[in-house]
Length: 259
Image 1: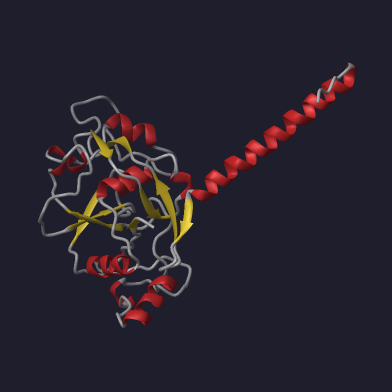
Image 2: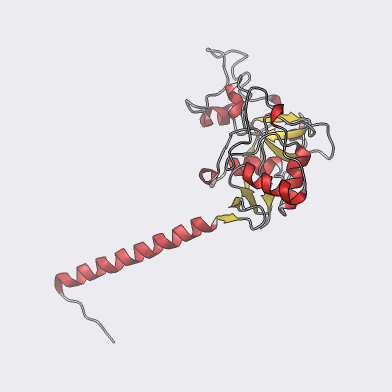
């Protein structure tokens, strides 16, 4: 059957068809975006999908200054170009800036593990809750929907394992923090977060270019995100920190892996 269009009516009909196609396309796009976030049936936490890809990991003066905002300024610099220009904008353990490839996509917690989720885990497994008195001057872990603070590295790793997940590698954490879905993430840079990796100050000079997983052994574990409150540069997404894995304190975590 052929439909013959005449005059102005044909223009209105074409516009109407184009409008319907646009609405359908927009709806399809919204479905794709929603599909990037998925709730875990085990721990009830929402996770964001990050496909495989490559990025520049670490810090350079140019990268630090281009990422700076009034709310997240670079660390203090000399006011005039001198041999000390750029001092403390990038810490030594954030260098060199290097290309890293994440060879396999992964799911990462949209937010830090909540008090509610960890309380449920503790009730089901008989594990203890982190002590609140390890963070002087603050009352933590009272909001069910708030992030759980004070878990040791071992406690964080055990929760993620129970949920069928794991702690993210340091590379995965920075890849997600700097990636296209960053706007879907919560609490970045937020409070310091545990990663799976052991810490080594010079690790970037020997790290594998694909799926780096940190040194094989070490004394401290890497934490990412957060700020020490003294150096504004501590809020750089490339900033690296470390702490003993058996300590409690001002630290949170999120899980990664496959759903």
